[in-house]
Image 1: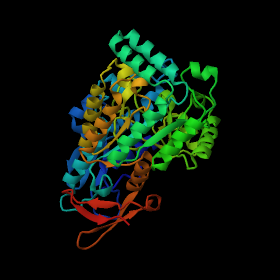
Image 2: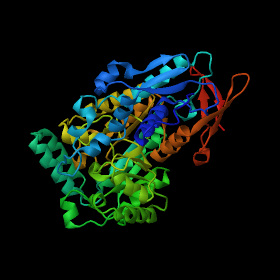
Image 3: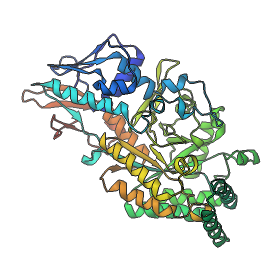
Image 4: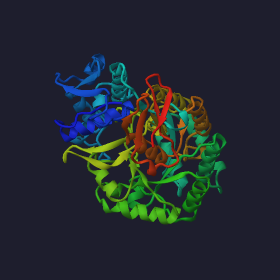
Length: 478
């Protein structure tokens, strides 16, 4: 438990401190309680490597943890994406390029450094507690110490031979002529069949065998020749084939989210239109979104998403590499640096994507994709965080990816071998919102702690448990 400063913080500092305390799993306590208190101190700013080497500048005394204000500025820049919001650079898809990310600039994008700062704060609070009661919130449901989520972007439904030809052209530029021959043979063998739906069914079968549920993001605009040439909208969501895929996904209990088209970036009214259209097709609420080609204007697009009724976004991953774009493997609220205020939507950054390797890194051996996925999953597990993977269901032999489908099965098996909590993204967000809102309200004479789960009604399926200084289960938040 920890007592936070009540005055003297700017809105940005308050946001950053709340993020750190949340990542630390510390339970904020009411002022009268005799628990560890947090004080802010002045230290010169450092780069991220400097802060890591200095233990984030955290000082511990009896009943007190002192944290440099400059660390909060680093949290805002990375986890709040304030640094990216200030960037003027754009790539050909109007994205902030990865080179503008502070983690990439310091070569730290594969390390959830902000989450490590939260862990350092957790350790410091435990040391400072002394005779005082110490409690933290259990990280994930069912006694699990980390979490994993599997997601899919449905980019291809119709016109699959055109995608095969584009893929062959991509392979030709790489000189992968042996692979081209295998793709061509698979495509010819698929004539008269529907390899797109077969790919979807293959993914669903792997997940059914593993007893997991995933999240699927569906494009929901009207395709035109222009959108097709741009690589944006290529299928109608009302088509029989698209409806069939959505129905299969929904029937098994997977979550449906919106894959926001290019138009949403500059025409924000399209968010609501596409969401309503997809809900009518899916027959279920659509609360999550991921932008096609991860096209987002940080600090701006999220306002439009929230205004359209989305609860969470999962766009914040790198298009051209895998890693932790916001410096964490977890769910985090969004921040508007220009307006100096939070945005009413959560971010679930994705950690790993298949095409970041095959398209941007030139790695055409699918087995290497799984190695990369599991390496990042191990890092997420190390910090007690959430690994989010993105696998495209069109990665099949006929569409240009020989040997890829079994690799997805191997990736699932490798992740599950380490016993994460697995659920669709909306469930992850519900849990994290409930966990974030736990407050210590009283300490009994025997040292037990009373805690209130302020938003438990939003996640009634979960039991929010507290843990003592040794990580043993203690009280239940009510």
